[in-house]
Length: 207
Image (tube, rainbow, N blue to C red; front, side, top):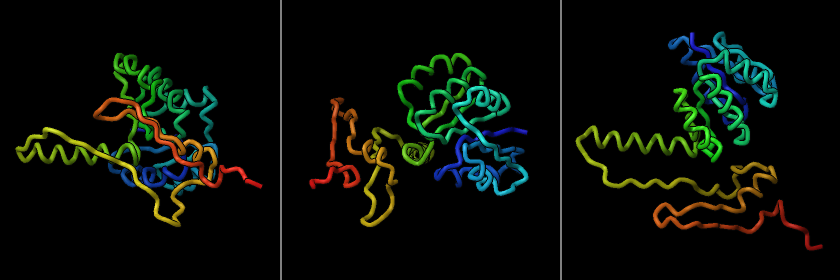
């Protein structure tokens, strides 16, 4: 039996956990979901015989190491700041990790060690980035399978929420982070910074 450990039972987790549990019998998996909020983890497991919920705090290193050692695959759905800690523990204990977070500089620094140990550290496997990569490869593979040749491929992701929607969280920290976007132009190679006016949540009252 293969044991899958899912870190995080937040808003982005239900569909993945549901899929893993639905496929658990067929593939002989057992799915453990860990979260600081035990009730959140329990609600995602829903009493499934192939699943288990546990109270889990990623800051408790001994608990993290113990659970990773017991797992065949670690799926990280926690906030990006926790990804390096989890990835390092997975590398040291030779357990593969799949994560929805971006591949930051710290993960790049782990790359050689992960390759040397033969450990898969697969990041950017969420909605964006993630699904955009997968659908792009599906298109490219289909073209090649039909005998075609791909000379160039460009993919642009992102979008704006519809007026009146509640697509953005109400956390002021999220809005502050989203007020500035810095990136390197994919063709020109020059650095760009796009800034927007602070949202109402962060504006000072003139009174």
